[in-house]
Image 1 (tube, rainbow, N blue to C red):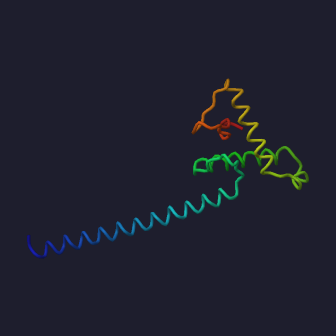
Image 2 (image 1 turned 90 degrees about the horizontal axis):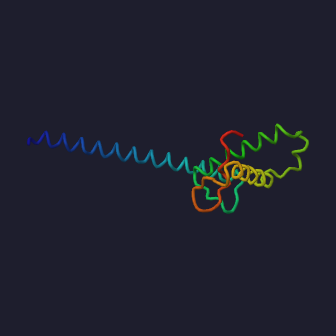
Image 3 (image 1 turned 180 degrees about the vertical axis):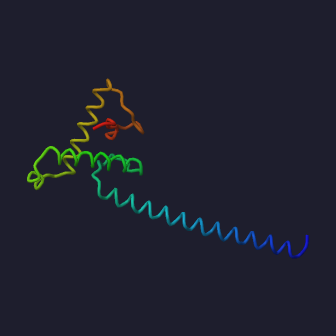
Length: 125
């Protein structure tokens, strides 16, 4: 190989490594931002002590909580919300929805682990 060819190859390898390091850094930053956003979400949604708050689980709880809040808004006067403890009543609502699903599916329910999963709500609410 000629000396010029070696320099060109070495330069290309160095440039590739720099691009790879740069891409890795961007991906690390993106992942950190995403994890920070999920932590913020976990702090804002009500959860039960037994809840495993993975990212998917957090999204399911948030979706259920939004559905619950919409139902509350559609079913009550706004003046009744002043003394309402949303987190406590959400746990009750969630339990009722899970029980409804179990009774309509003859006792069969999906679960991500062996413990009871309150988040297996019907698709249409």
